[in-house]
Length: 122
Image (cartoon, rainbow, N blue to C red; front, side):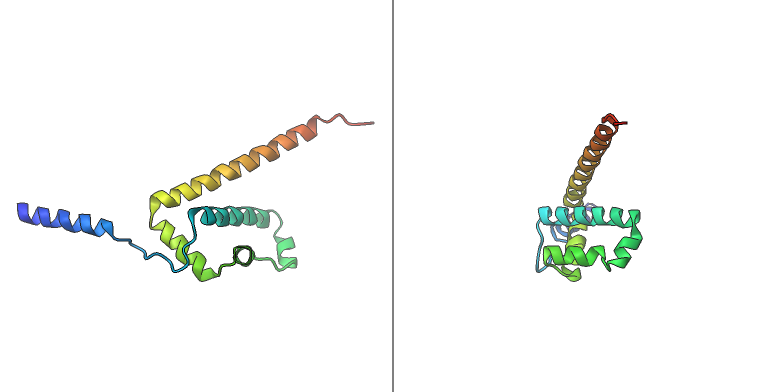
């Protein structure tokens, strides 16, 4: 019984040492992934606000981001999957994006509050 328990623990320990998802050929840094996720978040919000404009201009968020960061869909998917297999790093990326989005929201809220305080000329 003790030997089988030790064998199981050894197997678990060695399996944790290997990457679940292999490192992509073109590995993007966490900062690059953060920038991409941030841009995608902004674009998705913009599309939800005025979908017709994006349709008229034939703008798709993913193709815009791929062009901006000079990557293709395969590179993005491989990197997203790679970082998703590393939950601590993935969480850091998304927490940073969330923090940036919150700061952006607060700055817009502040601008809106300042705009409403401007006296109207009659």
